Image (cartoon, rainbow, N blue to C red; front, side, top):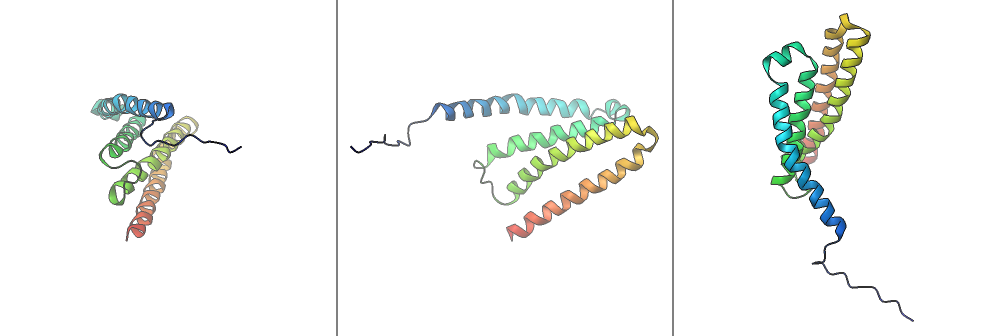
Length: 142
């Protein structure tokens, strides 16, 4: 007896696909205005001058906003070219900023008088990583 498999109809959508679309739309509807408001709040002059963590949190909000907006204007995950470089950099830089934020808080607690010297070194490391990442993608694009 031969097994019969149901024909795969491309017009049929699975419930998992609907759930994925609903979650994506909810993340976009809540994430874009939320990230804009977060960046505005964290970048206010009196907040930034009193709290060094505000710079990290504002940068995370801006980078997350870029990572949410880019897929809306370009096709799915095959962005290609410069938009792909910006998207991949945003995704990777967000994790580095969270790491930097955590290290900055740890240093501020353990060695409060050495914060500015150590943070400058951390800034150099992050800038070096971003430059290397752009260089890797630019060499791949050519």
